[in-house]
Amino acid sequence: MTKERYKRVLLLLGLGTLLVLVISVFIGRYPSPPGMSPRLLFEDNLARQLVLNLRLPRLLVAFLLGMILSAAGSVLQMIFRNPLVEPGFLGVSQGAAFGAAVSILFLTHHPLVIELSATFFGLLALAATYYLSTRIRYGGWVLRLILSGVAVSALFSAGVGILKYIADPLTELPELTFWLLGGLYSVTWRELLFVLPFALVGIVVVYVMRWRVNLLSLNDDTAFSLGASLTRERLVLLITTVAAAAALTAISGVISWVGLIVPHISRRIFGASAEKSIPAAMLLGGGFTVIADDLARTLLAGEIPLGILTSAIGASLFIYLMVSMGIKVRRDG
Amino acid sequence: MDNIISLDGIQFRYGPEDPIVLADLSLEIPTGKITAILGPNGTGKTTMLHIMLGLLKPSRGGAKVAGKSHKEYSKRELSQMIGLVPQFESIPFNFTVFEYVLLGRSPYLNPFQLPGDLDLEITENALKEAGIAHLAEKPVSEISGGERQLVHISRVLTQQTRILLLDEPTAHLDLENQNRILSLLKRMAAQGATAVLTTHDPNAAIFAADHFVLMNRGKIEAEGNLKEVITTQNLSLIYRTPIRVEKINGYTMVVMDTKEYHG
Image (cartoon, rainbow over all chains, first blue to last red; front, side, top):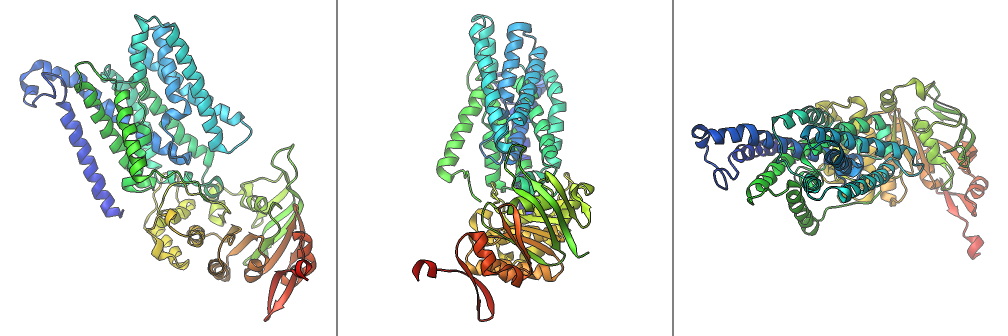
């Protein structure tokens, strides 16, 4: 794709995403599905309150969530040289889930405490994965982090299992289960403010380093010979993107498949170079998550957990891409 | 300066318990020449290149580039001075040839910078120099092995380094592609670059190199010019198989001494 064509397509994608955001403001079950007419904003006070206090912050969080998961997924896939990696992969999702469960069972149901606990445990899982990877004495950097991530995820996942088992089936278990399935039903402006600093740092760092990510995807000896400070640069990208993903997971619950499938689609359309595919992946991921959340709030009378919808759509797309076009997992050289 | 890289009493092992890969090895690489490091597989050639690059630190002894140890340079300075074409290079994402070769400009850009017009121009010229300008927009997965090696070398060309380290640059290539790559290296050396290449194929070394180093089991067995190093006796010793060095139409050639089997 030439530079001019890329700019044009990206501009179209940006306008399309903006359109999705604007339309989504009016989609919902009030006053009746699939939504309201814009006129209602001026006539109906309840509609105005609903849009300003609930729908707008929720839309923006959905958009940030999709952006961050896709950016983190793109970065992780490239620096791990593995197209099947997503942010949940380093133990972050399971760590955050454990943190939320701990708060629901032992501390309080207060949203802020749940968020803080989930973020804390998500980052703790990342730190544990990283520490463990430095203690493994064989294999390259990628293999050691992958093995550590699998082990740490499994431990936190077992922890969540135990907490579910001892949770009070009438009061605690439903809330815990709904949190684990993922959703943005409780988002207000407060949640948006909570994730905004993490999200902005993540987005800015990935955006300014987008060309450099290509270099970090090469073999260690080649990247070294080209002047990369491998450990330091990879850590900067890992920590900023995963911290943002952990903060967003803390308020959304476990949202899977976005971080895996969106980078694939973006690379397919815009080419493998991260300089082009990462900005596009952020827009695509944001738009995708907003649409999925529109469906989550509108399809049924009760809300469908967002994580279920992203999994269903994401996995279907993945199967389609694999069967019809062939996602290449190449082992060459 | 006569010698741009010097290794002095290098010993190397990967861990304190691991076997010694290089034992008390000293070597000078002459400036502006092509040095071929010959030896059987698993003899420490790649390890030695990694020490010259600064990627590995010797357990004992010292390495110097242009008179200074690697530590005295910043990563960026080193990468503007020494380029590497590794033996195996997997490119897991399907960059176009141009996007991949452009990465050779990284040493001149900080981590937050995008390549500019000058970098694009240098990349175009490198592709032309290597004779693969027509492949620029092709994905790297869709080109042949010989073209791929030319792509790797183009990447080092854009890096504009005085020193090139090439690990088995002609392995697995047919004769035409071997010729293309070695001729390109000779042109670069004629313009003042210093190249160090490892190979287990003596004929490729004879074609390209000015200076020869024979390695065996982490040690240097012989070092010098063609006549001094490429002898029947030396080669038969390190390859542990009967080999003869012959003059054919004025060219020195290394052949297997098949008489031992058929005669």
